Picture 1 (cartoon, helix red, strand yellow):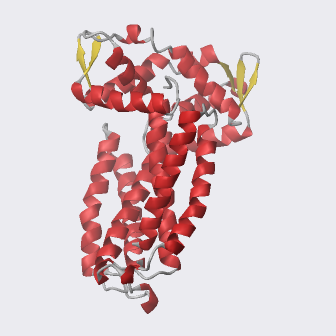
Picture 2: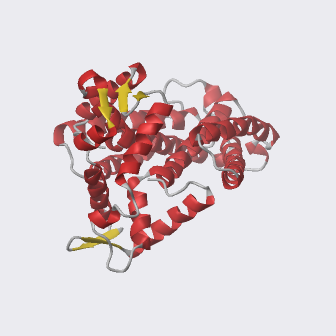
Picture 3: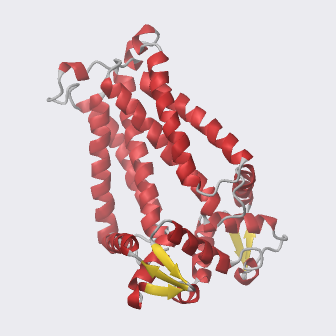
Length: 174
Length: 175
């Protein structure tokens, strides 16, 4: 329980830090900054783990675990997973096409929108352009005027993903 | 703690094998639903495995079996659930990743080079949005009347949460 509690407390601090920072500043490299805050929270995890009392001192035996390396590592794993799960949700809010469609439909008149009308508030060109720009930033593509070229890192990623899609019978997807 | 963690890891390996088998042999249409079913089916299996196996799993040293059974089991389920969540993240990247698909299309092109217009020609944004709207229809977040898509009450609630997040975290319109 000590590891789990330290993980939850560290994640709560991470969340508050991230919320304050993202609220006060417009962050461009969102994942990178989040990783930074998560790393700082990791140090805090160790502090919380040391400060919390041993399970046996206040919990019934069936809920008590010994304070050892396994408990410490297990809590660290849970802290990482809480971050990963939260990032998935955050990324959905930020980038998901489905979420953007929902938001635009919620702002639309009662009769709703056709696919064609949705293009008004939600430019599909910007949607693709934004992705291409990010792939260039991340070093998967390079841009030469209006041409985008797949470079070594991009080729490896594309090849791995294509194989996985084929292995899992996923079709072209996207 | 180690018994729960070990059983959580083993159950996740069983999940991976079952998921790959289902996807390769049956190619389900509602893929994530199929994954969720396999995942949930294995939770009672994990609990059963915990109950019927010895405390030391026949191999663990005495120092690793000191935790109370309830925290050990609960932790095993948490480990299994989080591994599933982590894998789902990766799965969505492979199956749905918009950027992943763009990368594959550029990588396949002659000299691995395309313009934005060429990307849009081989991977039409209309199809992507139509597919997502289809998913939203399946989830009943949206309804369709003729050619028009309308927000459903559950979709409106979701849109409110995500709009709040976009505004609160300064994310811009996104998507």
